[in-house]
Amino acid sequence: MKEYWYFEDFEPGQDIDLGTCTVTEDEILAFARRYDPQPFHVDPDAAADSIFGTVIASGWHTCAMMMRLVVDGLLGKSSSMGSPGLDGVRWLAPVRAGDTLNVHYRTVQVKASASKPDRGVVWSQWVAINQHGATVCTVDGMGMFGRRPGPEGRDV
Image (cartoon, rainbow, N blue to C red; front, side):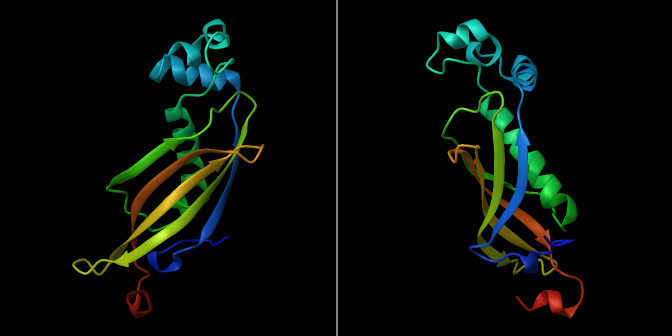
């Protein structure tokens, strides 16, 4: 894994393994009670009678766990200049207590800025896969990254 990431370090097709996190029922309940108090997220009895059968993590909680791994494994050691937004989020399978998510950052496209030579845009897809090999969430996003200082950072 790189020590520090600049725009020039990203290339289409690249897959960066950002590590794993395991979610507990207490974390699921705490997040949902505060931000997404739907019955199947906060009430084990109601969840048992739902299509899920058990309490599941809010999709937003899943995204927050993914974001933490993206920051810890990549953005926190990069020339990130933030993001103008996301193009898509898909919650493909429920996340349950005890699940371990492995998150990958897949570079889709890169483009150096024509108007601001100190930066470029990276389009990516974040993918969370549980311990059973099921993809549980994907996030299609874009981020701005600073170019490598000096003339070698302007040749892309």
